[in-house]
Figure 1 (tube, rainbow, N blue to C red):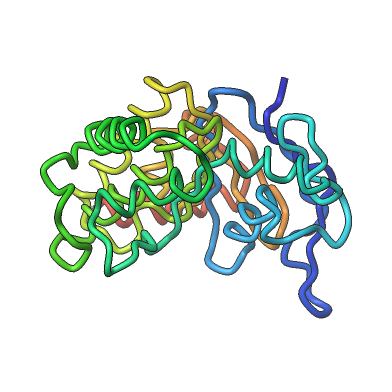
Figure 2 (figure 1 turned 180 degrees about the vertical axis):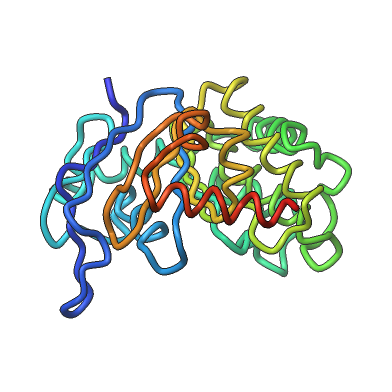
Length: 247
C-alpha cells in the first residue's frame, strides 16, 4: 500500500501551472528521490504533503488521508507522522544544537524531560553529532548544521521524512556523509524518505526509485539502474550532465 499518493495534482500560481496533472505513489519504507531542473516544482511537491500548499486540482493522500480536505485532527496526524528537513537547515541561532533538536518534542508532545533528553541524545547519535550538542549553529559547519536539522526531523520518530535539497551548498565529501545518513536512517528506523535533490549522483546512491520532474510533469519514474540507461530524452540529458560534472 502506498503511504503517499499524488492523484492528478495541478498547482497554479497566477496563470502558470507549476505542477501539471502530477501522479505518483511512494510505498512504505521507500526512498523516493525527485530530481529535475530548478524551478520545476520539486519543493512545491513536498509542501503539498503537509499542506503548506494545497492543489489547485487533484488530491494528495498521506496514509489514506486526503490532505487538502483533512480536518484539524487528521491534518495534525499527517504532520505528526512527518519530519521535514528544510533546505537551509533552519536552525534557531540562539539555541544550542540539542535545544534545536528538542524543539519539536517540546512544541508537539507531552513527553517527560527525561524522555525528551533520551530522544535528543539518540537522534544526535544517529547523525553522528553527539559531541556538538552544546554548540550553537554559528559554531558548527554547514554540513553539521544539515545533520542537526536531520536530527530534528527524525527526533519525533516520524513515519515519513521530507528532504528539501539536503546536500545543497555542501562539498562532495559532506554530501556523501548526508546521503549515507539518509540511507542509514531509512534502514534502521524504517522511515519513508522523499528526497528533493539536484544531485543525481546522490539520488542514484540512495534511491529505490527516482522521479524526474520537468515542466511540472513526471517524465519518468524508474529505479536508479533504469534511470541511468533510460532513452527518455529528459532523463538522458540529466544523466549526461551528471557524467559531465564527474569528468
